[in-house]
Length: 300
View 1 (tube, rainbow, N blue to C red):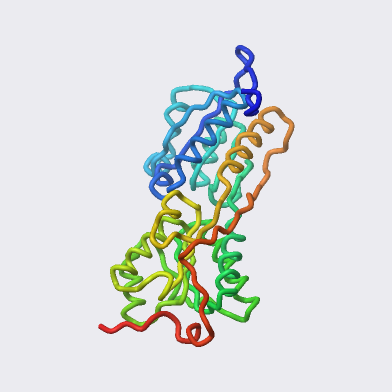
View 2: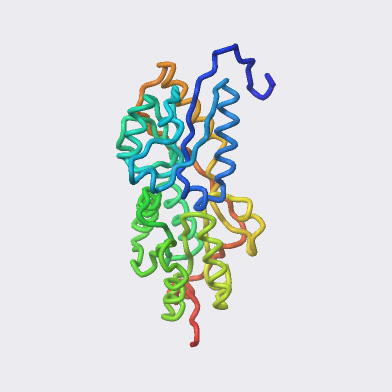
């Protein structure tokens, strides 16, 4: 146990942590289980007692406290995973004075925020595609989303450095009529030569839709995901994506919260965890002529 960084816990010395998970986050993120396991492992490593509870949108809208808090249970700190409305998070913060949010929206509350480096993901993805000859690049995100905004900023910054623009017609919303949006681009012979997707899940959905319409990845259109999920490595083609360093995110979240509880760190830190591009088979290099033509022409 010592070799793994664990220590023997003293009786009655455990810190009590509430771990709140936005229920929608479970459906949206294929790496959800790794995040939960990472938080659990780090809490145990630091002799902390962890209580997990899911919060649905109805509870947020009605400003109903999580069940454990409404029953009067006391906690030393709370970790929120996913996007929580500020008004709801503030109510939780009134009940639990120490809070850390993971990928939790805008950093507007007096608590600490841990994010994947979304802006850098967008910038690196666009710069990588440009280096492969792509100039007509699309973006698939979910709205509204803080991570989407940061990725969008990173993408447009990389494009601007090469005097390129992001065509609004190539910016799609993965949550609303996604398949119809993609088919509209196909039918209008308006596919970009590459797509940057907000998650591996949306990237794999895109590849499926393209395949059903006889558009081949990466021959006709390249695709980049984000998250380095298990499915990304076994999909056909294997998905180029970003490793978001979940173990580091979990360790930072728990240690930051414990430092706040112990008074050894100031409240209100915002931390961006670095990412790594994982090159696989869903992106190909194209020449100038292909870049000018854009995506493949289709016949109806």
